Image 1 (cartoon, helix red, strand yellow):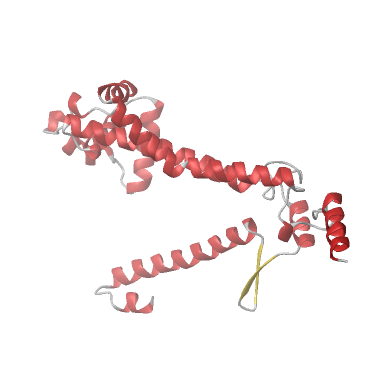
Image 2: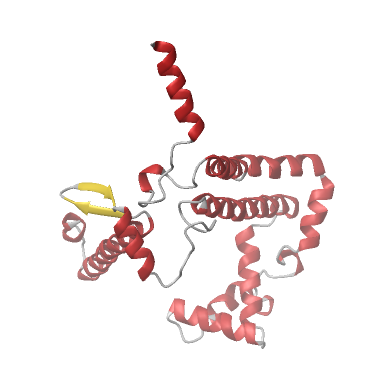
Length: 247
């Protein structure tokens, strides 16, 4: 990290690189705090260990969101698998949408970024509340008093810009027309995305729910006292019968 700062050719680059490194170091600390809280980790003497059940119960009592121990939202009852399923479903949706956007770009011979620039320019020219919000966000990001002027020279047709009806944003009926144009290929690609991203998470959730149904519903290593899985009476009977047979 020091070599990056010392290798700068100007004072401005050295200051910017120092700020970037400071941000990354602070972000790393915050990420470790989140991971420590979510996964119940405790760091001591260069070793990562799980917190004891008593410490986890104490942390759960201090939490602002109270979750019942037997709730499906509890981390010992399939909550991580549910989170993974929801995340995979969102990613599957965005992958399918991006696939349709790419197909629409190939059909219309227009770049998605060019359409996004035109859409952004139209929003900055809008007099509604949405236009005010977009202009405020751009002003904050670009640190410029009038950020829409930077788009006018490139997008405004009156100033020689390229934006016209050809570069409008993709709509739902455009996606529907793309699916009807080649339904087999389009649906096959979307199903492939779902098989790769979503189906494994659903199987994992089903397996966790089945294991929970066959046990007391918690991981043995993380079960607090009084919740450990008790031996089934039939298991004890089978063990006694095996000992009698040996004798």
